[in-house]
Structures are given as structure tokens and as C-alpha cells.
Image 1 (tube, one colour):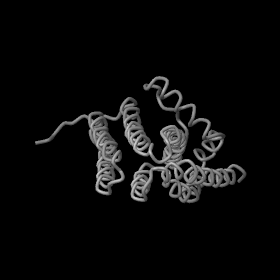
Image 2 (image 1 turned 90 degrees about the vertical axis):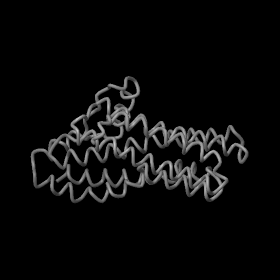
Image 3 (image 1 turned 30 degrees about the horizontal axis):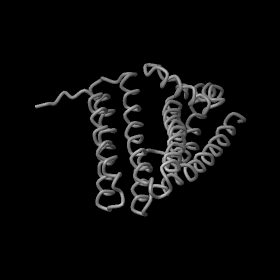
Image 4 (image 1 turned 135 degrees about the vertical axis):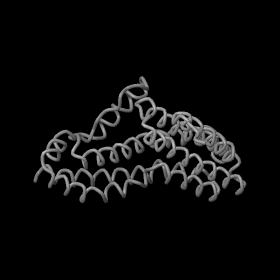
Length: 238
């Protein structure tokens, strides 16, 4: 018997694992609870991949489904970040802990928007299509703001789009040269953050994760972006 579960229902169900992860990580000082939080987030990753696979397999992809998927993803991390912030209040004070969580969350949004954009641009350009295509604003001000952020993160995209679309040989060279950049950028993906949160909790404090998110991943994003611009600039000058 086939279960006709809507992809959007899978996206929403994934938040349940985010709630479990947040509850478990609130008790991160106990290794077993930190492990439970990590396991719950791994389960969420399964659902996060399953909703898209189901939508594509059943022909039920939609602009709203894409927005809902992203909204649920961010919701899971917001729950976990807040849980860790309140759990760590005895280490550095609630104000500092919450402040660090908010800064980490802001860095997370920018980094994730950039990483997601690079994946989408690479896939589209590989197929000879325009790289940057704003999302349909079905999510209201959230989607509009996200589009604006991604547009600022991808300046000069249209000139290279035109060159790649008109020259298959140039496009093949682009794919070969830019694939390592995309591979390096995977450090900014959700899986890396899930693992880093777990490691920080095992190390005894979520503050280690805040530092990694705010400083470590931000530096990585800047360096990878500089490398991307250099390589794309070489294509425009050719």
C-alpha cells in the first residue's frame, strides 16, 4: 500500500525532530542528552531531504513548498540555538549567551543564503540557464528579504550568465573550474553545523559553537567568496 503523504507535511513533521533536539540540547551537559540531540537533528536531516525527493518524484514541487522547506529548516536551528542559549546562561550570563546566539543566527542566515545560492547558480549555469533567478515571493516579506540578500551576494551575475549561455565550451570550463569552489562551500551547509553543535556540546559549552559560527564559518565564507570572484572574473576577461 502506497502512502500518499504530501511533501509539505513531511517538511512540517521535520520540525518535530527540531523540538526534540532543542529539548535534548537544553540538557547538553549530560553526554547522553547531547547524543540524543544530535540523533534528533540527524533524523530531521532525513526528513529535510525526503520532502524534496517526494515532491520531485510525485510532480508536486511548488514555490510555496520551497518556501516552507526553507522556513522549517531555519525554524529547527532557531529552536536549537535558543535552547542552547538558555542552557548556557550559567556560563556567561543570559545576556551574553543570547547575544552570541543572535549573532550566530545572523551569520548563519547570510552564510546559508550564500551557500544555497552558489549551489543553485552552479546547477543552472551548468545547464546553460541564467544563474540567479529570484524566488517567487510566496513567503511575503521573508521571501522578499531573502531575495534581496541573495541579490547582494551575487553581484555581476548577469554578464557571466550571458557568456556561458552562448558558449557551451566556456560553460564546460566553468563547471570544471567552479566545482572545487562549490565543494569547499559545503562547510557552510546544515550538516556541518549539526556536527559542530554536537562537538561543542561534548566539549562542554555551546559557546564554542557560537565562536565557530561567528568567526570560523564567516572567515571561511569570505575566503571562498574571494576565490569564487577571482575565478569568475577570469571567465569574464577571457
